[in-house]
Image 1 (cartoon, rainbow, N blue to C red):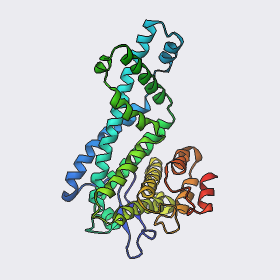
Image 2: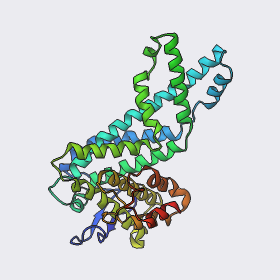
Image 3: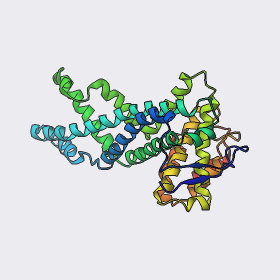
Image 4: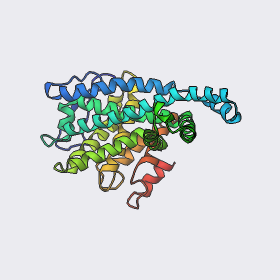
Amino acid sequence: MGNLIKVLTRDIENNSGNFFLDFENAKPTEAERRVWEEVNGVLTEAVIVLQELQSYSGAGEAIRQAIQHPNDERVQEGAWAAVVPLVGKLKKFYEFSLKLEDSLQGLLEFLTSSRCSPTQHLEQEQALARQFAEILHFTLRFDELKMTNPAIQNDFSYYRRTLSRMRIINQTAEEHNEVDNELANRMSLFYANATPMLKTLSDATTKFVSKHAELPVENTTDCLSTMASVCKVMLETPEYRTRFASEDTVLFCLRVMVGVIILYDYVHPAGAFVKSSKIDMKGCIKVLRFQPSNSVEGLLNALRYTTKHLNDESTSKQIKNMLQA
């Protein structure tokens, strides 16, 4: 993720000096180790999930043949044989989203505690801050790949239709299938969302706040706004951006910035777009607009279509126009 990055906190806390946020070499302290090891196992699996999603080609041709030849038993069996292992992958992705939800809540519990400020958490618990960023990076990448692959919805729709026919013919048929009707219903809700992983994280963050009523909601929102500010400063400040060893680090920071904005917008009662928001939305959008459009269009769409408060009356016309441009 590049060299050690020195981040100005001028956008974060007036009474704070400079601190370092190391997205590459941060190692867990003993206090962080238990949570870090739990999350690290999930992040290791996340790499495999992305690889499998990226190579997901679908069973489009087999399905087309089955639709065109509804009475050809051999063609029907061939389509079913092609779709079932793919649905097994989709099941794996869905089940991974549940692991990711647990990991996010574990990180939030550590990073939002009242023992220190959000900036101090990021400065002192960099290994967990890095994992939090990696979860957001994975989430945005997963959703980008999902949105550009219509085969996922097509395959799963065909599977459900066929499963329904099988149940009508033989009530015990679904007992032999990897995804039964109940699980298929839950998966259908997951994949029907344009950005399913981001929806999972948004819901998880909202649940976290509700579950931990003893914590002021500001503990969570300030953690999110601090991360957004850190990423924005890294991206817009030439002396920091030039320290990135790879251009991939730019996209990493962009995804993390957009991810925490969306989470903030769901958790904060007034959202991320109001004038009183601790996130400089105009500045963040300008940073996105400064990038090549083909690399950030998915991120801009995430702000346009997956946030909660963008279309509120309290959102300035300027911000709306910046996102519509």
